[in-house]
Image 1 (cartoon, rainbow, N blue to C red):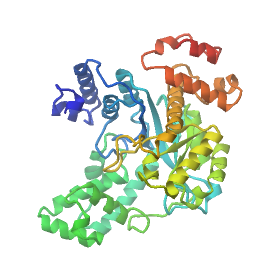
Image 2 (image 1 turned 90 degrees about the vertical axis):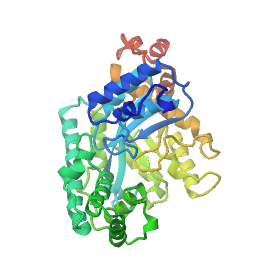
Image 3 (image 1 turned 120 degrees about the vertical axis):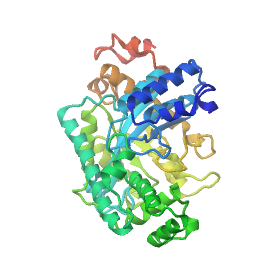
Length: 443
């Protein structure tokens, strides 16, 4: 409670995660007013990869709630990413502006990479399929072509979830879900994911088997595990086992994706570029066949527009342990630096137990902080300049204004480190005729 302010009530905090946008807005305004603008000094840490409840947040956080917590915990920067939708964009940017929080908005989906059709990349067991991102979206007012691509991503994701439900229902009967009644209400805008479905199955089973012993017997028999492997009645461990046993490779609901299952990486990059954002390669841990060929993967990605790398550091080290994953982490960062690819990092928060922010002070991550901080500042600078005056990282202005990517990175890093939310009026007279030095002089 103290974290939200001494006058915050449980009702105020719960209202931050209401599915009613007006209720969330009023709650954030009330809590900000109660704080009277007094927040911790911004530190050095960041989380630029948090999912909101628009694509499943394990703690139910709305865009406003995550923004407020980021400010209250003194993050230097905060960013959200949701699967297949930009539904959180306007709310998060408005909340960040109110809180004077450096921010960025991204989207994530899966793509097919033809050049790696026979190699697993970062989607386990699925050759040619890769999780992929666009960083620094500033608006939902996109071109007709981009809007159509975005709508297709949403529709395809929805169709996959509905199909999954039908297959798993046959396995979990008599615990069967109705998409409209049991799953969709768990989302604020209809973008249901596998994780929503797992929660819905856990809750439906509680209705069908109200007696604890019967519930335990059902899940143990269906999932082939013992009761001590589950945190009944509806905990995160149970949901994770449901997902692993029924929805992932080998499960009854799983369908092996192919080239036609997702757009190509090149197609998604085109959408991201049309939207004024930055296509980004997402890196898992360097252990798959595809990621062992990381040089080739980066080359293929950059050929179709990739200009940044996204990393989830928490997956890639164990404190006090020098192992293959840690070595791979350092390798990908070194490669990104050599190619002048900004690196954006964060924790997902879409699974129970995920951290709010990475352990950047550990011996393993601390040496990488200059690279991570630079990446955050570059993407934040893009977010501001693209949104305010159309001079983003991959704009025509940026292509003409700098003698190479290194010089461009230096400018956007400097701008991102100096510029603070609330200074937008300083950019009023900036245009594509303004030089980088003139822009920095405004700060």
